[in-house]
Amino acid sequence: MRSLSLVFLLLAMSAYAQTTAPTVAEAQEFMDKAETQLADLSVKVNRASWVQENFITDDTQAMAADAIDQVTAVTTQLVEQAKRFEGLKLPPDLSRKFMLLKLSLTAPAPKDAALRREMTEIGVSLDADYGKGKYCRKTGECLDITAIEKLMSTNRNPEELKEVWTGWHAIAPPMRQRYSRFVDLSNQGAREIGFKDTGALWRAGYDMKPEEFSADLERLWNQVKPLYLSLHTYVRWKLAEKYGPNLVPPDGPIPAHLLGNPWAQEWGNIYDLLGVQEDKGGVNLTELLKKKNLDPKGMVKYGEGFFTSMGFAPLPETFWQRSLFTKPADRDVVCHASAWDLDNLDDLRVKMCIQVRGTDFVTIHHELGHNFYQRAYKDQPFLFKNGANDGFHEAIGDAIALAITPEYLHKVGLLENVPQASNDIPELLKQALDRVAFLPFGLMIDQWRWKVFSGEIAPADYNKSWWALRLKYQGVAPPVARSEADFDPGAKYHVAANVPYTRYFLAHILEFQFYRALCRESGYKGPLNRCTFYGSKEAGAKFNKMLAIGQSKPWPEALEALTGERQTDAGALLEYFAPLKQWLDEQNKGKKVGW
Ligand code: X8Z
Ligand code: ZN
Image 1 (cartoon, rainbow, N blue to C red):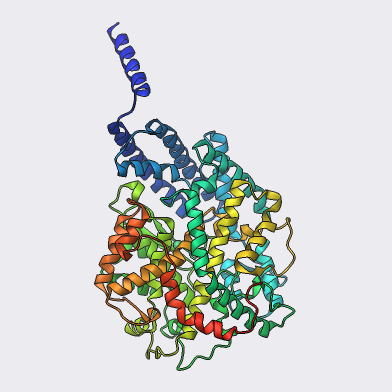
Image 2 (tube, rainbow, N blue to C red; image 1 turned 45 degrees about the vertical axis):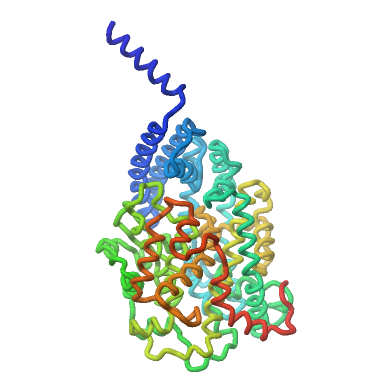
């Protein structure tokens, strides 16, 4: 009898707890438990995904899907339970955690377990299909994406380029149905937790209203657009000289297969076609690396050396044991470069199929930027272990890579003689081909995806709208007629793998802001493009201040900690390229701008 009344009492108490207003203490307790649980599950997902991306098989796919399904289920449930605390006045840190919890799934899932599982399996299968993607030529030779990128960087035969471009894009049509189902399922999940759609959830991660964020992007794009147009005009003119006006119309878009890259996203590989006279030996990074006989691991060592020179601790021994630096010959892996933090503490790794060439040297610094960021915020609570916003995470290593100047290369023994700074136009052009050409590409991918998620772009228009945006922002066109039998977005890793992309647009602006601030901190005076802060402990300490904040504060505070500025702003980028802009406009006189 007594025990029965105790049960009633307990039941009554718990019903009371559910119906009465929750307290801040309860919210705190809920969040502490949630963070412990999520941290634990994240390690399992990391391990399963690491194995899946390093050994793509049906089994590893199923195992990764299990782990992702589990963390998705738990997060969805926590978000649901967290509704109880809505409207409660919480301390800023705690309230921020509730917000971040809601945004933590890139693909929010329906509550229905079968639908959630279906979505997860589609997600993993698209990522795997991209990783396995190959184009087999008539000769029987099969090219994976690493080989295709390599070929497209140096081959200048338009017919072959067209063949390979078309071949790579043929990996994607089988993804189309699954992608559109994935969009529907994820949208359902987003709506169930109070967002209009998954794109709206993505846009909510910038400490401002989603509409304000869209407006901010427009402002930034308008800041850099004149520079992009000048570059586009010059490159189109030189390509028209090389390939003839039938292939490259002097007043139209540039065919996307001629820009040295499968997606026409970075154009540095066609630098040699631009007819720029290099006086007193420009710096060819690929040659320097080869001359030094560097292997992939040796290249990563240089990257680490830059960070340690600024006062960051060396990478742990396990980084060197567990990372993947070269493409294994005997199995499928996702070669698209990535940086990992398996245990949210010290188990840092990169996974990258490194080739000994300049662009990979830059990408290594990019990836290490992620790793050093991860370590700098490792003492934050779980939900704050992230970049101030996702653009910050992408910009850290890029800011370091900007400091790979001739002076730096000389200091570390890779370059004998430092060329005069008097004519840096060739170097600036080389940089712009990668970093400025990228800007409209970095913007258009999510302009497409946000509309896909909102339903403004229907599945029947996926490809048409993709190319309309490619034309609008980049001024590029497909080399062969496209139709809705194609699914060209799926031939880009981040679409297949559902990785938001606006982060890279932001990063390409932020990296110059970070770079300029680090230069100032190191005491550098002189033209911005010649600054390196290699060895500057002052710059390192200031950098670390921003990095250690992680996502614990709204991003303007993190930005201020390093730069003193609270707005993302392209001023530093424009300052860096000012001499080039002037030069391009002189060259372009009389040429049509735009398409
Ligand atoms: O995906 C990446 C990194 C990994 S986070 C290699 N990037 C974007 C891309 O390759 O499309 C870096 C620049 C843009
Ligand atoms: Zn990255």
